[in-house]
Amino acid sequence: MSGFGSSPARRRIAVVPAYNEEPTVEAVLDRLYPLVDELVVVDDGSTDHTRKIIEEWLRGAPHATLLSFDHNRGMSAAYYEAFSHLAERLRAGEISPDDHVFTVDADGQHELSVFEALGARMEAEGLDALLVRRDLSTYPRYKRSGNWLISAWASLWAGYRLHDVESGYRIFRVSALIDALGYYRGYKYSETVEIAVVLGRRGARVRNDVLVPVPVFRSRTRLVDFAIDAAMIPVAAARVWLRRAGRGGRLSPLPAQQAFR
Ligand SMILES: Nc1nc2c(ncn2[C@@H]2O[C@H](COP(=O)(O)OP(=O)(O)OP(=O)(O)O)[C@@H](O)[C@H]2O)c(=O)[nH]1
Ligand SMILES: [Mg+2]
Image (tube, rainbow, N blue to C red):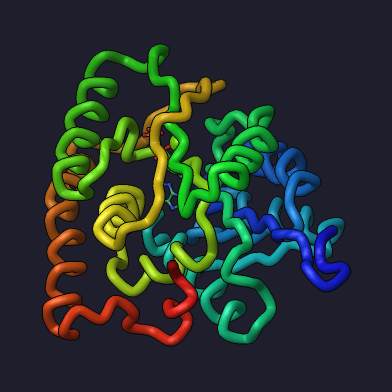
């Protein structure tokens, strides 16, 4: 655990959104928990036994917190809830602007054997965000084409090259994450594309080219989710521009965000 001495080590906080992940959630939490200092899991109104499984798992996990919705609100809402919780903790001085937040899916799609190496890279390069690029070579062609297209579209609006903008396997510096939170909310799955664009427009140092394998293929996203994401990309960029114009060039709408950059 971190927190000793005059320059405490950077804390690692994991955020795991979960919706009807009964077969995999416990294994993911078991594997992830020893890799981090704390873990926040969001049950997004699951209708299977996901919530019960998490509640039982929590008994042996003193550094983990469950946030939950009574009804399903979508992946973006789950992330928004978790990140708002972290913003509160930052304001309360319980976490620091330089701590790292890792987002990991509850379906086992994110390769945790590279977790340490990703964290080390983030640290060594002083990044604000590392959006892990998933190796989608085992995915069907339509998924790969769609991912390429939306990543290219997002790159235009973000101002840097995105290779896998839909990736949910990410690391954020707390200050950059909370800053970005002032510019988007996300709908359905759009959180991933919106935050990637906002970070770029805010001048954050971001990489999206570190390639990792995907252990399992399973897809629940649909064409309508793709369309929503595509539509939200320019909206996210516009929000940053409008906010900047409206505030005469000031870049920090919330007190906590002054810590960014
Ligand atoms: N499908 C879905 N997942 C949710 C929801 N809320 C939270 N999640 C969680 O968000 C994470 C990502 O969801 P996935 O459906 O795997 O989406 P994805 O991996 O981005 O997209 P795919 O490439 O289609 O697998 C998982 O851990 C889900 O359990 C929701 O309303 N629907
Ligand atoms: Mg998934």
